[in-house]
Image 1 (tube, rainbow, N blue to C red):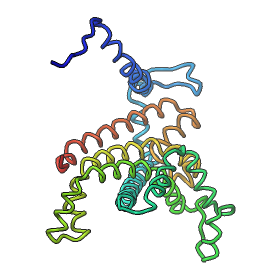
Image 2: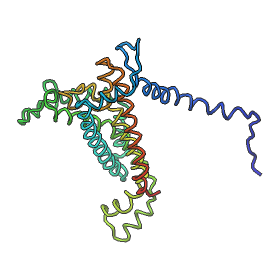
Image 3: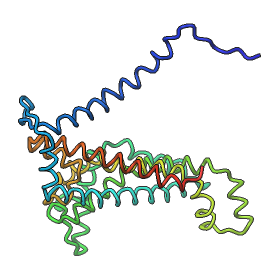
Image 4: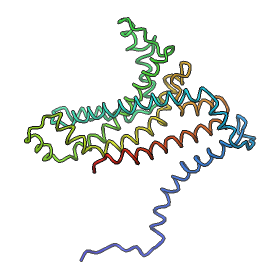
Length: 293
């Protein structure tokens, strides 16, 4: 008979579980509850005095045309970043999964960008595509393309999308590669024996078996785009020009930290939190049905 470990101290298992809920409460639930409470207050720029005003912050927020513009920018930005980062990462993962001599080097180079902070990634891309100092902006001008993300909103959006996609590809690449390596080779070989070509094997065998990984990455990428891209936008465009790259999370910062309107900023953070929770719930409710485990 196998021996089993018996802990005589009945309190020990609960003590081992305490750090995780404590950290979650301190860094997530408490700030979230504090933001909800502050959204019902009118505070001065220093947070020294406050008055309870109910839903006035929300009423003023939804009366601002700039907030709806930030919503539209967020939809476009999040859709482009999520779609491009997932597609490119899957393409790279399928190539790295092949039996190539340089595959280990390729995998190492693909992982490196994940170690770069979002703000640093934004600065790197700004140095490359700055209209006057950028190393890649000069060739664009020589080709007759008037590249200027400081003045052109479409150029600015393109730049922040490229930086955000580049930053997230490494994360998606790691999970896609792990998912591909977990697929039994016998299944792929059976498809090849049946006469299925590489593309047909990918869409009928590989991609359906990757659906759990894809679903997980879809949820993670939505959260990434809504929150973690703040550093990129702040470093590259600062929300400009004329608010064309001001997403909802950056507007929270701009109105609260820069504008001093703490009540409106708290209301925006609550709305953003509700939107992200709703999107995640919709994904689990409808998208997960198509996942094959």
